[in-house]
Length: 306
Image (cartoon, rainbow, N blue to C red; front, side, top):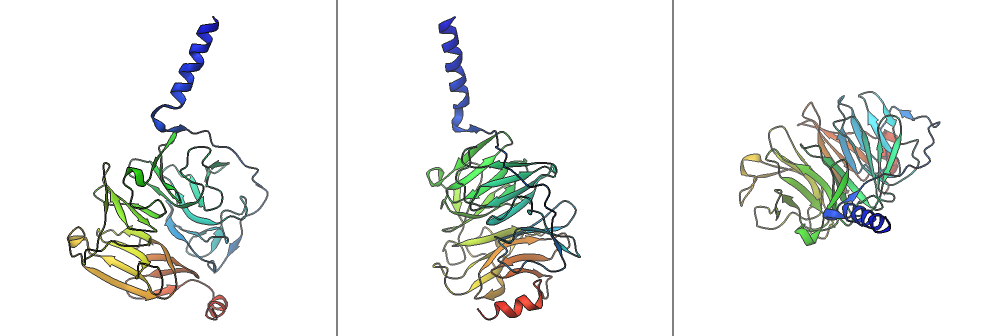
């Protein structure tokens, strides 16, 4: 009986460590459910890192220390009031209706409408500094971290780093295109993953796209990015569109929609075809003709001083 007990423990140990994937049992934090969500008529004036859309068409903004906001077309609601102050960098509503909040100081939070769960390196994340969240067509949740990419299948994490071919371990943004390729904007070269290998994406001059902070595919298959014009990240930042017909050619057609000295972040195409993108000072919308600034006029005057 003694040896049988030892053998059972051995089998359990082997099972729990198999395949290099950690089985996930997220821990719960002390969340203050008595705090009410704040509602305002104007958008966040702090840096908006990422922009997403929920199933109802509402726009979601991750505004760093300001919190995560939902815009319903009339007002903005802070939906992270109950969690408290963190450096929020991204938000996602998955196909089940769960909300995910990425932070760069405490990993990832998941909210199912009733309770919160907290995922960190203890549960299998590659790093607790999480910059982006993405759900692929198969329902896997991808997390871009400061230590590589983590893919969560609902039970366990699988991590990808430069050892597996990733171009850089510092991930800014993730996106899946219509062909099933997973794109990664990094602090280094941008690349895509076809399920087997990672390929660095290059521009018409054969140079890699560097320091891409936002990337999305519109309904026509065009790729939109926000990123630094110069490799060192200094100087101008641009909102650009890459034509779908020449996307994988050696000389892809590129249209620069906006150029600014201010840092540009996450990007989204809304249901109406408009392009939303975050910046150092709030959030903007491009409707194909004009760019709208959603911060209140008082905050626009204040930030113009800096």
